Each structure stands twice: as C-alpha cells, then as structure tokens.
Image (cartoon, rainbow, N blue to C red; front, side):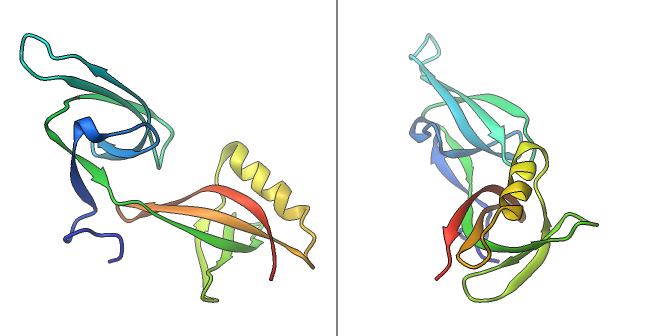
Length: 154
C-alpha cells in the first residue's frame, strides 16, 4: 500500500525533533501537533517534551510527555487534492475526481462547519470557470477531507 515506510504506517523520530504543525502518534492515534513544550533536564537526567495534538480523525485533543532523546512514532501522512464533482443529497457521499481522471465515491462530506461551508461553496460555483478542490489527508489506512479551495479550471 502507498504511504508505508518499510512496511509500516509510522516511522521513528527523536521526540526532541518534533515541531508544532508536525504529526505524532499519541495513544495510538495520528495527531497534528498544536503545542509542544520542552522541560529542562531534571534530576532524572533527561529533558522532557510535553506534546499536545489534535486527533486527525476525531477532534479530541490528546497529550503525552516524552523524553526528548527517545524515539516516538510519527504517522506517514499523504495529502492529495481532488476536484469535487458532486455531492449526493441523500447520502452525503462525495463524487471526487483525481488529476488522472479517476473517480472516487468512497468519502463522505465532512461534518460541522467545514461540511456546511463546503456545501455552500459548491452551490455557489460558477460551473463554467471554477472548480472546488478538496484536500484529503491519509494516515494509517484512513482518509479525511481537511480543507477545500476554489480553483480555476484549465
């Protein structure tokens, strides 16, 4: 499967190398790092990193503390942009088209404000000159739409 490094969906990184905006596995969940605080070396000899992340496939905040010299798992993240062709009213299924012309119908519209904004933007498109591009992230065999933008066709 694509996105795997050496047969895995994660790879090791020293906790001291993690940065805000990056990704890390917390409690077995892929998370985007929203805050990181490094605590100085204490009486036990290792600096600590307190990492706060937001679950990519939920919205829960998660937090963990790591020794900065120890390895932590970082998920392999893939990002792709797909053109939104249609939204099925009865099922919330999206019909998306890749750059190679292939169609996908296996993703649902996002929930909450992102989903509402996506539907409104799709309804307001000028079909002759604009397209809606959805950003899809993949990690650990799961996928989710995280953003969209209006683009020019052509």
